[in-house]
Length: 332
Length: 262
Image (cartoon, rainbow over all chains, first blue to last red; front, side):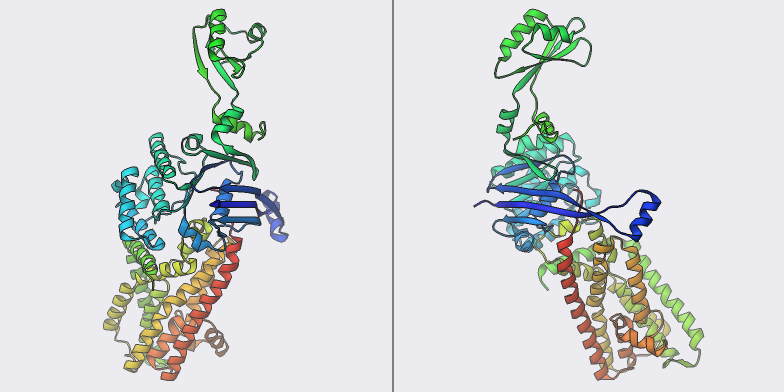
C-alpha cells in the first residue's frame, strides 16, 4: 500500500480581479470581482514507503500548494489525498503525528526563545519520551552540529543554523513521511552539503521523503525519483536516472582554436555535428549524439583536423533537461 | 490541563518576560491610568456619591478596574492575528495539537506573565489609597473566582476577533473595535451604573461587562450572594458559549485557509 496517494488533486483559489490605479481600486470597492486561479490541476501522485521523491517546477508551478494539500493544511477543491490511509485535512491531528514538515521560508522556531525551548515544546506536542528525545538530539548534534546553538535565541541564528534547527524540529518525532519545501534556500555551499548528507542518511534509514527545491543538486544528491510540475500539472514523473538516460542524448566538446572560429565552415567540414559559437571569437562548441559517436572518435577527428589550443568535454546537466521540460520542449 | 497545554503556556510566559522593558512599561502605564482615574474621580465625586459609589467605593472600583484591565490587556492578540496574516498558521496546522486549545494555552500563559504586576500594583494601590474593603470574606472569595474567569473570557473574545483576519486580512481596525468595546462595556472607562439605563441593558447583555463590572459589583456588595453566583455563572456560560462558537467558526474557516507562496 502506498504511503501517499493523491488522485485528481486540484486546488483553485479565488483572486481579486482589480484594475490598476486609483480608479481600479474605487471600482473594486464598489463592485468586487474575482477570478479563479487553479494552482494545482488534477495531479495524480503515488509515493511508496521509503521513496525519496523530488517535486520540482518553476516558480508558481504549484509545488508549495501541493505540499500544503498533502500535509492537510489546505483542503482540496477537488480530488482526494490519502497519507498512510488517512485524509490529511479531515484527520489533521492524527496525520500530523506521522509527518514532518519543513518550509524553508517559514521557521517553526519560537523567535524569541532558545532553540532548545522550541524543541522541548515540540517534544511535548508529539509526546516524545525523554529517552527518545535525548537520543535524537544527540544524533542531530552529531550530524547537524546542533549543540553549538541550542542555547541561542532563534532570532540570533544565522540562516544556516536556523535551517538546521528547523530540520531538527521537523524530525524530532521520527516521522514516517517527511515533506521538505526548499530546505536549502539561501544557504551557502558548505551548509548545503551538510544538509544533503543528512538527508541522504535519512533516506537510507528508510524515511519517505518528498523534497521540493529549485536547487537541482539537492535533487540529484538526495532523490531517486523526480516529479516535474508546471502550471499545476505533472510534466514528468519517473526515476532521475531514466530522465537522464532518456533526455540526455548528446554530449559537447568546447574547443579553443588558434584563430577565429568560422561556424558555417566548420558545419560544412563536420556535417554530423552541431556547431555553435563560444564565449570568444576563437571558441566554439560542437555537439554530437552520444549514441552515434564515441567521445574518443569525436576527439580524434577534431584534434587531427583542427589542432585546437585547448578543449574540454561537457555533458548536458539535469538542469538543462528540466529547463527544457519547463519550456515545453520535452514531453514524457 | 495536559502537559502540552502547560508547555504552551510556559513558553508564552517566558516569551513575555523575555521583553523586560515592554513588561515594565505596561506596569507603569497601568499604574499611570490608575492614578489618573483616581485624580479625575476624586474631583467628580468629592465628598458626595455618584451612581451608588462614594469616594471609598469608587477607589475600590478603580483598583479593581486596574487589576482587571492589567489582566484583560495582557494577552497577545497581535501574535494570534499575525499567525493568520503572515501564513504561520500553515506551520500550526502541521502540528498534532488542537489549534484553538493551543492558542488558548499560549494566550493564557501570556496573561499570567502580568499576574505579578497586577498583584503588586493592586497591593500598592490598596496600601496607598485605602479603598473600601470587600463587603465580606465570601464576597472577596467570589471576587477572586470572578477575576479568574477573565482569563478564558479574554482569550475567547480575542480569538474570535483575530479570526476575522481570515476575511479582513487586516487586524488593526478589528483590534481597535474590540478594544474599545471591551474598555467601554466592561466598565473600565466609566462604571456601567453611571450610563443611561438603556445602555446598561446593552452592557449587561454582552460578555464584556464581566471583565470589570462583575468582580467590582461582587466585591462592593452591589449584588447579594445569589446575585454574585448568578454573575459568575453568567461568566462561565459566556466563556463556554464563546469557546463553542469559536470552534464552529474555526471549523468553517479552516476549509477556506489560503496561504500563497512558499
